[in-house]
Length: 126
Image (cartoon, one colour):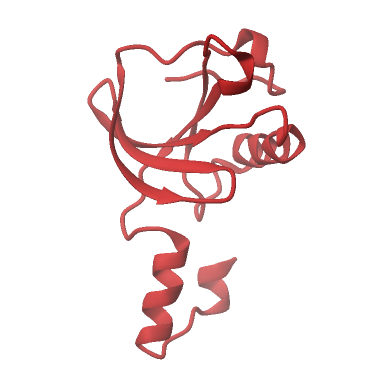
């Protein structure tokens, strides 16, 4: 599907192409935004990271975790990474393409459990 290498090599990361179409914003975090999207017609989530140079250590760690643990049954599949190059390098965007999970974000899940005075069992967390 997308590009996955043994290390995050921004120079060889491809540009997102017409097969990857962003739909709507579904979440925001410390380092970027998450969009629902379509990749060749398949529903996916795309996490768009900005300020790459400022956050490269955290981005490298996240990349390695997604790459190494993407086949864990409790984590979304990681399809790969794209780099949207801007005229000014500081405005480049790194796109992580992931399996779209139903049920919302982890924050949504936890807030729903708290609202209903429920918790997660250990086997659900592990």
